[in-house]
Image (cartoon, rainbow, N blue to C red):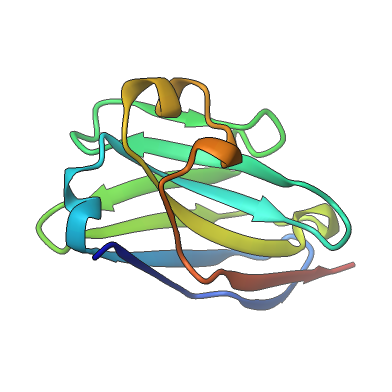
Length: 126
């Protein structure tokens, strides 16, 4: 059974930092990559960042490049999202996702995600 559990969300002022964690278990171990998506109230769920299991490749949404860093620890089955210089527009529920194929990593579409975590709320105040 696939299971992803996020943690680390919270409230922070603009310019602050947060680190999100995702603990993976079950079949997510064999996923090609892991990703982070976010969904603001009334908006679609969008890709934020992804990393291959090998750690050799990462990708980011343009809106977070230079501010967010995705990383992984295969020994602990963990994926992290370090978020710096946070802006109010970063406010959303953040979800960890298993991206099972190279295509999903290269074309991260929420409709193709095999497994989701329950989400963790990030709120950035101005």
